[in-house]
Image 1 (cartoon, helix red, strand yellow):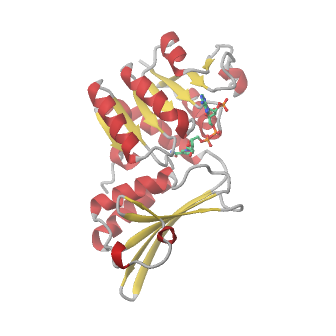
Image 2: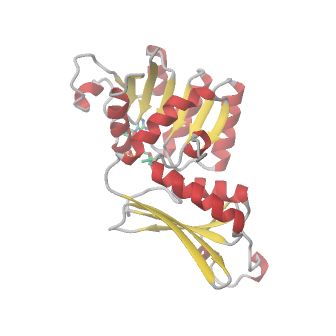
Image 3: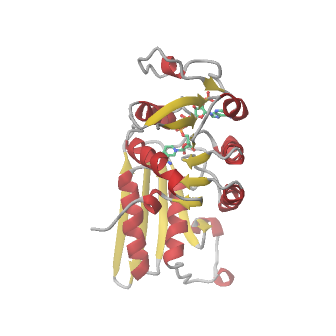
Length: 270
Ligand SMILES: NC(=O)c1ccc[n+]([C@@H]2O[C@H](COP(=O)([O-])OP(=O)(O)OC[C@H]3O[C@@H](n4cnc5c(N)ncnc54)[C@H](OP(=O)(O)O)[C@@H]3O)[C@@H](O)[C@H]2O)c1
């Protein structure tokens, strides 16, 4: 049976690319989308999907859940509405794939509890691009051997949240491998604390927001007389996120509770 997929943010930059990808998959059925400005319209027409069968757009998640049978909800809207959509879906026993950035560890604790309480599953992925997953994996290996590292996240000037979801997730996963050493204690520090970046799970994360940048991430490792940089740069289209998004939708039913990162469901054995 086809898995019925609903995409919150189906008309957006990332959501529309994923909607088209889901629409083309034989094992998935795109049953609807969420958008605050296009509620009541037909997603097939908005995205030019080339089918006569209407795919409804809703403006409220509650209305969509009432009207449709949904197996997986993909959250791709904005941080201010994302948690409401996620928690509402979980309370209705719908499994969730989270692409939206800007949720913090406290949000994830609540999301995990809601998933567990409702016997549902959530897969939160800060970045669905397979090459970014590789950056995360390579950085985890480096963090095992090098306890001195920081993260820089670069984005265009209009990105509203900082650090990026990718940077948060990278900080979270690296800190689990080994927390970075703090060489100057907070008591001994002189100057503006902000100049050392945000401290996410004990990791210094620096966010650059400038025109001329799309989305990049870099983990920097240092040892005496040697350093290592692992960097990823994204291009301008949302295409790199589609393949990983579809993989997440296919795998989210395979476990219960919360998993973070696409690497948590990928096989890295050679
Ligand atoms: N994990 C990843 O790999 C990845 C990749 C790309 C982007 N992202 C993240 O995904 C999120 C979306 O990014 P984007 O660039 O696609 O944004 P976008 O182009 O602005 O799209 C946002 C989508 O959400 C809908 N939306 C926004 N507010 C809403 C509300 N209150 N109620 C219902 N629908 C609402 C928008 O429709 P209306 O305008 O009609 O409301 C639109 O369909 C961001 O947090 C971004 O950082 C993650």
